Image (cartoon, rainbow, N blue to C red):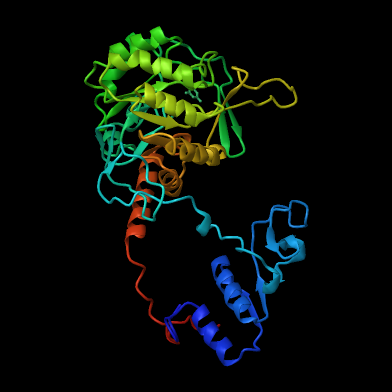
Length: 438
Ligand code: RRO
């Protein structure tokens, strides 16, 4: 690393060594980017080189064809034909390392991110963990909760006012409410899958009147802006909800949930661009509050739904809600969940969320709130890099009620690390600093 001897890229002394001794044979292993540089150097000079290559392997015995590299004889599998190959056989770029294949770039702004602008997806920079202006609403940071995954009223009963002092999110999104009270689906309502959770909750809530009478005053005491999530079984119902809550000072923004997978009509508005646009057009004139459309991943083209919502007057979109899934009761072969099917969330859906956030952010100019399997600051940073202006933590809060704070802290740490110059050169190891010999 240059702490002793020469500080340079390894290819510099390699080039000098080859100049001095052109008949040298090179054996190299290391990061793919370095091997690519060695390959180019050696090939240009006609020097024989053998490279120990790496690639992700699924099977390890030649069946999956996942670890191929391009050669003059076509693709070869590193697990059975490599991993050491003659450089001269190789063609084109070598497989890139995990770090090099990370998606796009991040907003480089150290201050408040203007979340109404088209998302930046090129150029490097640390993720922004700082304040966010989301549709004109000031948030202390970019981390929200996913609707229905954190009950702030129950949490305050459990943790007392300490919750308000250390609130886990920069804005709070309510559980979705409907016009009339609902009991929700019959149990069982939850099923754990590998790396995920299937829910069939079915929208239990107190209804509009109950929400305004008993929940809204308590939610208004939270130290962060309040987003109320609404769902109507028809455009008229949605209009009544928006009219009633769109005039409340306690409410900073309204989320229109067009994507609940667990009630019969839950996906009707969200799965079709025309239906989403018609619903947004209907409620847009009823309030000045920012309208966020919560998109479903179960649509054939979420970006088209997002665009239609934007054209109809939505101020932001949030995604992803859960993916439709199912579990069978062990040994019985019948659906386990009371609602028959459910919505899948958690780490299992993270890659889907990343792709959908990326494609939606590329299709709209309004801000995107990204969520789906966030469990760390790194995951949040990935969604911001994919084009999200803010993120939401969902299923992880069931496991760790303070997950939102942790994710925000980890995000800030990543930002600090990304903004800092590379670490100062370490002192060379001396004999005295080595552990004593056994
Ligand atoms: O209550 C639910 O079953 C539910 C809702 Br509203 C939603 O939007 N997403 C979800 O996975 N479950």
